[in-house]
Length: 65
Image (tube, rainbow, N blue to C red; front, side, top):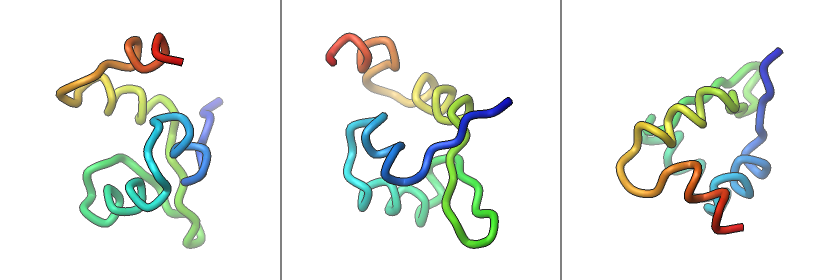
C-alpha cells in the first residue's frame, strides 16, 4: 500500500516550507496527485524524485537529522 504525504508532511520530510512545495507543484517540478482538489504526494515517487534530482541525496538528508 502506498503512503501519501500532505503538503505539510512533505514539507517536514524534505525540509522545505509549504510555500516552496506549492511552488514546485505550480511549476510541475514535483510528482503529485490532486484527488478532489487536495494535494497528495506518493512517498515512493517523492523518494525517486529526490534520488534523481541534482544535489543532496535522500541518504544525506536522513543523516543530517
